Length: 238
Image (cartoon, rainbow, N blue to C red):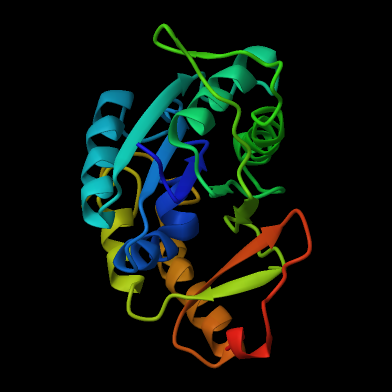
């Protein structure tokens, strides 16, 4: 299956938090979008890996993505080396996306920046003919995405561009709250973490509101780019 957009996240819920509204909007426009999680989030303070698997599947249904896979790298301990790069390359070549979205280049969680660089490097390497990979027993063709963009996560990184996601923030929030074990629940008896407060969930909304305010719309999501962002002409700007 060829996808238009492939979204990578170091953990289940990264994609939803970082670009859930963009995913929903692109799907509404007829694009095929998939998600690949690098780990199962097994080191998360709350919940456990099997439950995160269920939550991720439910979130995928809410967003309407075409496919979701998990590479089952070691949460907290995966590295940007040949072994891990080859696994990511296999996903890129399998789905041949035009655009890849991935973790923030700099963030509070060490897996985010590490996953960001891993995916970015794999996107380049995936285009090299002499790197050979197999899907099952079938050799894969080289493929390099046209664009690699990084969504914003914990830190308020200055975006290179923003996407108007007005009308899709509710879907984003529903997909986030599909991870019931991870976020605010006033009845939970589990330990508190930086992402379990109501303030954290509220911050996802008010960041989108603020980015939207700056471009004259209700909600927006921001991204950083590895190259200059180009437009065809002034009419393509909002």
